[in-house]
Length: 540
Image (cartoon, rainbow, N blue to C red; front, side):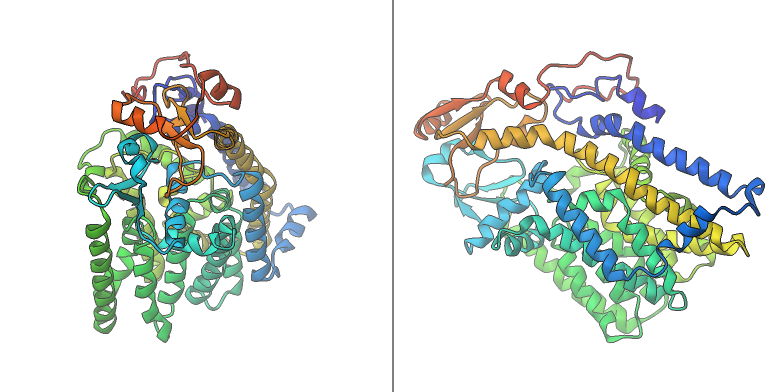
């Protein structure tokens, strides 16, 4: 909380049109004081609740709470998750893809719906590609065509929903599927305790990160869904469906970025080798080998010559991550269901005595989190820690191990553990989730208003200087075939050929700094209230 308060008084923690890489710090400073405040309040209350002074003192309210979720059908939980995410897509995210990552999925989906993999840029606009190209678009100069930078599976899924104008429901559907798959996984891991599977579903279903990310157009909910289905298949090694897991894994690799599934799955695959299950090693190995080879060929064919190597995003030593990753850990804590961080600590405490799949789930969490210590950049936009999102199911499995340890530790007063869990779930839904939805909606609102206004102007070209407002570069968005009007162009160091191409586009309209400010965007540099020793300031 102190870190968020302090950061809000620095240049890095405030929107600044001169700084195009500060969303991570701004969001942390803006949101986490209150979010972590709820976590701190609940944690202190839980410590008091389990203290020796409270033992033997029974209140009817905790007993009532302990019974509240005991017999809730799993399909009701999944349906509630779908409904919350679907409503949030409309009223929180305003059906607007805030970040370029989100927009790219629908960009590529439109191309797929035309039966193509790349979209040819009309000859009229080839000279102006640089200024009309949205962020994260790969331009192929040999064919004068373009496509999204990322691998195609998630965009293909959005294309299916987009064909029915239901693309905003894809992530809510995937969220509901994730709840069901996690329930099935925990049932496989602890078949003797049906209650544990409900606990897992409820901890996931009341996580603010899980629900708010399901309202967005990010690919991360798809990563989580595929990884959780993979876990469900893998957790029944005595069943034939165990051998379907690598096929799901190959699809997960091709969703968006391959590394998300790779770091998630590594401990589970290594376990097969440790246990000398050579038949499984052979089948899994061959499926993953051919699958990865196929995605590599896709990259070779459909990546432009100028595309940088994957290693350009990594450093063997990146000192700034010593600051960023602790902040990311706070995001994991602050956006989880309130009971989850405490239960994870209990689960990790006895991890050496747990069965292998639980140990591997813990290692998967640590490997995913540790991997990004070597990443070049922070996550930028995101609700919670989105780079960790694909591994949340593993975190919940560790939390369920902690839940079992908690019930054992309280002995005859098991009602106390149930009351702790029930209160945490209720407060997560009625306090944490509304707070996080408000924070997300208030951040998205000005960009959604600006985009709607820009694309509703009845002209041929709209010119926008991205230096006028903070993060306004992401407003440079056009359909992949450049058929819709207006064409939005970035007015940055225009070359004569680009000026000529824009002139041929028809009537032009320029968006002023005052108009962007009227939409609610930040157009003036902030004044820092105190010194920033980490120098998280301007990205020049």
